[in-house]
Image (cartoon, rainbow, N blue to C red):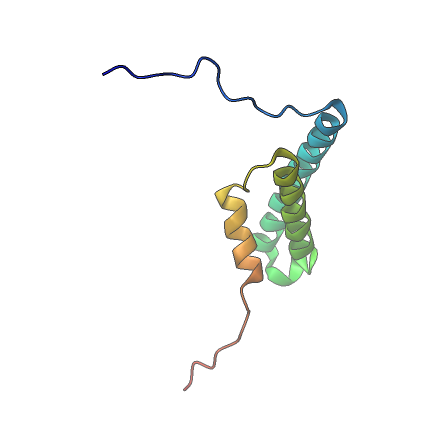
Length: 100
């Protein structure tokens, strides 16, 4: 039973020069934010959550925003680790009373 293989792979949309420049700019910003997040995380480990203040949350939100822009530009879904962080930040934070 013969199998027909496509002669050419399906065409892939290529980024234009301005889109490529934008992509590399977003990539550089994500890498920079990764470093800032890691240093803020180390500070939290050393000094406690109050030491980071709201900086950790602001950095995480900017990091998520840039990942969303990259996904939109490339037309791909976000990576699983980004989706996990997005779900964690959108989860309601309720304080439960453990005494009752």
